[in-house]
Length: 393
Image (cartoon, rainbow, N blue to C red; front, side):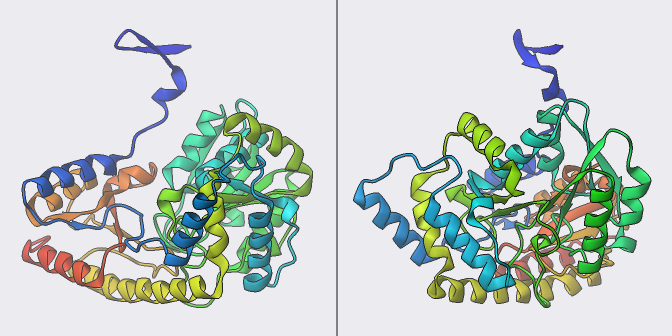
């Protein structure tokens, strides 16, 4: 069945795939800036740092050689080996490069994963709130995304108990994110192991989003790959490595899925961007890692400023996020309409944030997300502007 739009034929699935509400906020913010108004951007989850110079240099050098032909669909062999080396150095994990698939951003990894796992009607359990594209990729492949309501009591993460309660005969997979978007929380290693064992016992597959690994501020996040060889892990060069516009990510899959993933990748996108892959080879050098560690410390300083500042203003943030660069804040002291609230903050204070409506159906009107992807000075300006509004008074 399809739906009609302006006399055009549109697939019925498009009625279930929603745009980002934050894009309305961003568009209005750009309009205000064009009028000469100052806007503090805390709405978009894109690091404000430029791509590290060694990565840029590697990309320019590769382009200058003129060897910009297709790579294999699974990615440049040298990059797959470099990522395996990264897992060895960071996690002390011996990972075969054959399990690593280079993709056009983590979105490409999500599409491949859902494409090889789901039949029409198959269900995937995931936390609500969560990153909206996860459920939309499930819908695109004719599966059913089942959002499981989570709150501060579980660190905004799924638990074995919640998965057990929501598992049905149609459930074939569980998707986790650690650190998560929008809450920035981690799944404890013992919980992650228990979830993996439960999902395996039910005959399902576990998918873990680790794209914010590297941006963890207390200790080190453990990769789910250390628990099992039978799960899928999605990662990206966008967040920690600062390569958003290069559109490059990767997927680590069980060995026996390599042939079907290769076949699907050939047909969907043929190969990831060749210049981006050569540039990414420099992401793992000591010079680049030093830059990235300095940036991680800057993100931590931003979190450590913004978190108490927002709590003092009256936002409810019951769990300190251990990673990523987001604060998921309860705004019910001020409003029961997070979109209108976000729009009003933009118009009246010049502060752009994301309404909770983008992240699911569990109390979205009572939450907003702040992204500390702008400088500490800008964050201080934004907080001062919010103070001047006398929120809730």
